[in-house]
Image (cartoon, rainbow, N blue to C red; front, side, top):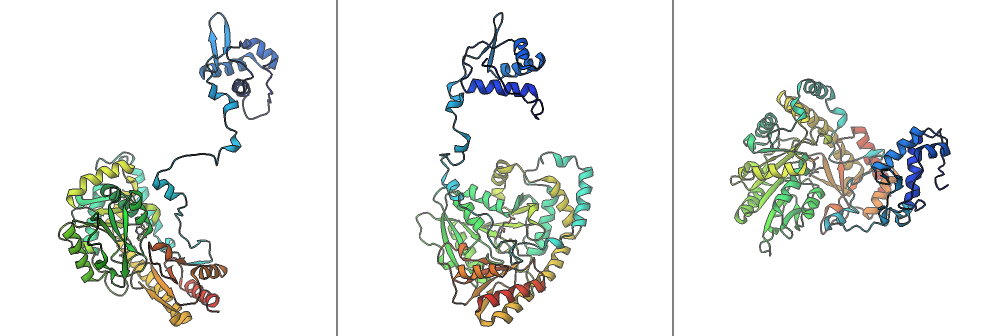
Length: 487
Ligand SMILES: Cc1ncc(COP(=O)(O)O)c(C=O)c1O
């Protein structure tokens, strides 16, 4: 009989399901022909030595999925219209599947195939000078937990969409007050949009402004996340050099086929060189942008950390003509998984940003916005920043001293007066690859700066984050590097 089905009463799959799978397989393999009569439930149950009810259950499933057809007064049949391409003979073998897709990705999709979202160094290195990472061990978790449970208990609203597309209004007020106190940026809370980190702020800006082929000026070297977001929209990227005073405004294109639409800068602590943009450069940049109707994107990602002196005000503070789109993040001062950042928008751009944010991901989670509002309003944010500034300052000094002790003139550093990393220039007769390989041998992780250049990369430049390591780890790491590099 064509209806022989191997059954195993001990298998985790119920018996009715085994019969269903067995019959379905026979149909797809062409062993039961379309239109063929199938035995009654009574005769198949006797043949398979199972209850009639079990067979009836499998028939019901096959009928509901269209593999069987019931004709009143005649019996049950294999469906006549099993599509030919469902038959197993025409299905590709499962083992052939994974590498045989011939999908056509967009240009953007193609560019991501070999993209590595996590730039080294390897976090598993015994001493990893990873950059841009807060000292998470120092985060006041107990306070955060307390605020979280306060809002978990009482806030039904946090489960629903916030009708306010810009984000939780009290959080926007708290950020406006904080920016005025700490960055001298005066803005109305209704010009602040809450976003999922500054990466989303950059991404939305790119979507809103860039048409394929539009020119975007970026710092060279610069932040890869911004470069990718602009490239994704088809921007034509124009890399502009950076020196110890920040972006070299003189190099901005004066005569281009398409005028520069956006200029992306990190004036407080240029990423990754660490240069702080001078006042004259700031004024020059604003004048340049205003004269051409270009919009400046100011990414103020780690400006809270300035050592020795007070933080210098943001570029936005000098902006009298709404030429600057200012963005900041809580990823560096609190923790990166929080995914809360903010944009200070010129009033005419508020609606379009709200709509772009809604289409991108509706809104950022509300519960975290409630918690963060209280965290700022009750003074925890600025207390934490002050504590971290002192801690990072000690770690930074340990790094500067260790480099001077073990490398003397063979290493120079840039950007050490601000932020959470320094850029080191090694003057050694070794290639960058050799330096990285030797560092790995002694369990030390550092980041080569050349991938951050769009053109003219410099040999021997490395980014060293110091915020996650204690002073003795820092000294030990630099000592190990000197031993393995200066041979
Ligand atoms: C210069 C710069 N801007 C923006 C970001 C994005 O930060 P987030 O999206 O976590 O706010 C980073 C992250 O490392 C960064 O280094």
